[in-house]
Structures are given as structure tokens and as C-alpha cells.
Length: 448
Image 1 (tube, rainbow, N blue to C red):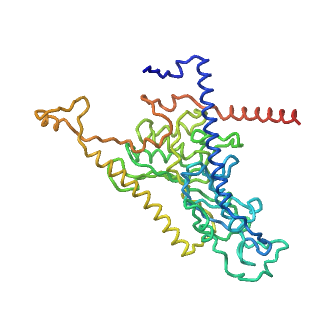
Image 2 (image 1 turned 90 degrees about the horizontal axis):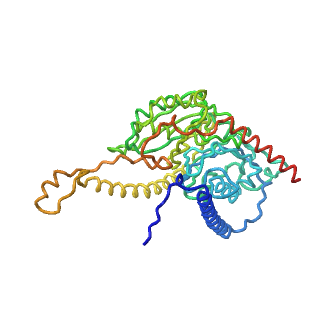
Image 3 (image 1 turned 120 degrees about the vertical axis):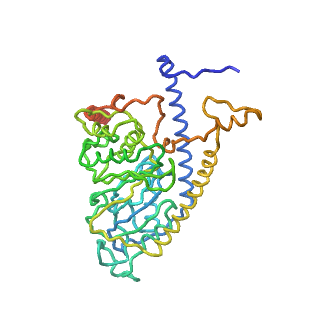
């Protein structure tokens, strides 16, 4: 049988590279077509399951401006924010539930704001949204009388508020939960009224020096230009990268031995840039592994000396959590029955995951207790070599529990960050998109 040798890209001719690129483009097109077909099928199934709703007269109810705290496991979603290319987002599920329960008539008229815009795969314990919901009340904190409404003449209870959290959790997917709510002033915004945001990144210790990481993380505190610790979003008009970090810490949180101890990186700030936390974690991992000195943080924050970001892979989105959002003067209301139901629900989720975790850990414990021949020594096959074999054997200890959390492939020889190829400068990107907008404007004018 003939064996075809795989050639490296640098060994291919220009024509061969073009052929390879076209082949890859065809594969991507087919995969996208498959994904779109599957997504359309899932959407159609949901639509078939949804029964047509009876007409509802919203004019019989006032609205109330409230803040809702939401928790979600984002691993199977394409991010929080609604998107044109997919409806597999947290926000899409939220508004499906809000409209199904008739708490809002439509998003466009709900005065909606979100605190954070988490990316694909990122979870949240403290996401907060603010919007106008239907209310039973005719007056009270946050109540907004509906123009030309008839709430005062509506029959029924006008003093007991709707159980917002309870009815939302009845229809939300199991990996999205409403936790609590609060009446707020009509000018309250979950985005602009937020004082600070807390993110946590969970990871196993592995071979990391967490004390070294913690000391390096302290260099991030303060007001800095973080262009070398984020993905520039110039296309959406973000051209200022100065942000203020209030505090950071790296600490071991879990019991255990070896590299299986769980740790967390916590960072608190007023606002964050696109992929900022994941980039900071990636650099701290390099420091914890001893591949970079803590002073690399100072170097990357010095944008006068280093205005272009060195190319490096971000940390995985899986362990990242929007842990908390802080507001002034918000008194959260917890409904006891609903709170108990949420705790019970999350305990069941935890049970499923911890059982799987312990099964895999049991496999690891069993394998790590096996004594195998040392490198360079062969195991004897007869009785004479049995004693000698036992003396030449040892257990294998591999501290790579966190290796999968850095995207991309690892190179055999580490190349320091400051010696790597650099990304485009901020000025080059601004110029690029300025030219692109001008060309788009010219094309629009010519086509009109």
C-alpha cells in the first residue's frame, strides 16, 4: 500500500498552497452548510412545539423597571448577545421566555440593557439585565404608568407583584436560571449603572507556581493601556484601551495533592475589553510555568516601548465566569420557594458533573499507582529478571492538568513573547478600517 508523506506548508510551491487553500475553503463551506442545516432544523422543531399564543392586552397593565440577576452555564451557547447568524445565545433564550410569559411585549420597547456581553462558552453567576416588565401594581418603586392604559380599571389583584423569577424559571432552559430581581429607578441601566464587574477563571494547579502568578497579577492593578492584553475591536469603534483594574488575586481554592488542586484567578474592574481576561490568564500561565518572568507584565503594559501585541494564544473560554456585578442602591428580592428550587436544580447539575469527575479521577489514581520501567530500560520477560525489573520501575508523575486550557499547538522550543511576531499596531488598524469605510461609502454611492 502506497504511503503519501505529509509535506509542511513551507515546503509547498505557491501553486500547491493555492490548491490547499481552496480545498480548505470547500471543507469550511460544507461544514457551515451542515451546521446551518442542523440549526435551521432545531429552530423549526422549536417553532413547531410553540403553540400560537392567544391575544394579550398589555394596555391593562403598567410596566415596572426592574433589574434581573441571571446565572447560566454558557458552555453550549454561542455567547450571551443576540446574533444575526444564530439564535443559540443566552439573550435569545431569555427573550423567548420573557415574551412567552407575557412579561414583555417585544424587546424593542422594553428599555433593555445588559451588564456584560460574555463570549461563546463563557458562563455567569452574576449577569444582570434591566428592562421594563409587566406589573400587577398601579404604583410603587419602578412602576411606570402606561400611556392611555387601563391598569387602574383592571379587575383582580393590584397589590401583589408577579413572581418574576418563578415564572421565568418555569420556561427557561435548565442551564439558564433567573436568581433574583429588584425594582429600580426608570433611569437605571444594567450597563451604565454598574460600578464594577468581577470575573473568575478556574483552573487546576498542574505545574503552575501560583504565588509567582499572584505577584505578577498585582502588576495589572491600576489604570493602564491594555492593548497587549486583549483582542482589538477596532471594527466596532473601540480605539481606546485604557481600563482600570481594581484588584486581582491568584489562589488555591480546592483541597487535594499534586496538580489536581483547583485554583482561581479573580479580577475586579470597572469595565473590560474584548478577551481581556483570557489574554491576562494566558500570560499569567506562562509566568506560572516559568517560561516568562513577572516583569513581562510591565513590558506589555508599556505601550510606548511595545505598541504592538506579540502573538500568543488566549486561555480557553471554558473556565471563565462573570462572577458578580456591583450596583449602588439595588435591594435584591429573593423568593424563598424559588430560591430553594434553584438550589435543588443546581445540586442535581453538580451531582452529574462531580460523579463524572470522580470516575475520571479514579481512573487517573489507578494508573498513577502503576510502576512502569524507567526511561531507557526494557522490562525482562523471565523469572530471572523479575527482581531486577521491580528495582528499575517507578510511578509516572505528569503535571499537565491545565495544558488543555491554552489554545493552539505547543512548540518544542519556547519562544519568549517579546521575540515573537507582532500583530498590527492600533494606528494601522484604524487606518485600515478608515479606508474600508471610505471604500464601502464609495461603493454605496455608486450603486445608488
